[in-house]
Length: 352
Image (cartoon, rainbow, N blue to C red):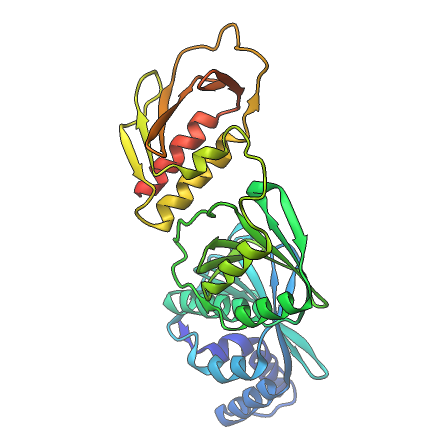
């Protein structure tokens, strides 16, 4: 069974109208239903989207109502309910003097009342609501910004001119449509914690032109003006901190995996200079290494060697030797938990 999105959102209203007509002994015509649907849509005064962790953001109502009729073609009524773990967010249409319309949205299905809809229309509907939600997140009025550089463990509260500039940049951000983007954050891992009367917003700067905003189980990526990143480096310069022992590895131009032990790894090389995706992966590897705990002395029994990781830094190769619970860089030993497996997964995922 297929239906338009209008009937999808208002099927409960139409059903109740039919039941009322039957109870009163009158016949409800198709024209009556169409007029009722138009009236109910006209009663909508606010539309919001709720995340899976209870956050709520308002959507642009005129844009939503204008584009709504073009969404949701090719919907198919399904006997398989939308599972809770597949829910991405909840769409709420608030109406004047009427109960709100609530639609639970997943990537491949949506549920309205007791009815679940699947098919291409449900997929397009999810993508459309996802896009509208992203725009709503950035359209808020922000009154404060805390800038932090996570890799440097430093932060700074920005002033009003800086807040105004960042708000202007976010207002012109363009949504990234590729949800399979594998971009990790580049050093020094800038984050913007935006204060707002509506809801706080956390912005991760992935690359000089790409940012990411979490919303429950969803993640919204946007392309922004590269001048923003330049400003961030002025406000919180990446060089104003004494380097930790592993920090020089952030400057590696190549990382090479070598199978030298028991772990089932493949010989692989990562050219960090190729794209920001490779560069972000390299920086994420270093961040994983930094979770290791520096030991005062070498372990008496480190176990069997797993594999080696070679970093080319300023023309010099620096090698890390992995063991089941330890790794060694130069003459320093670090304790870790499954770090060797997690590092290798980054190489595997990059190839997919």
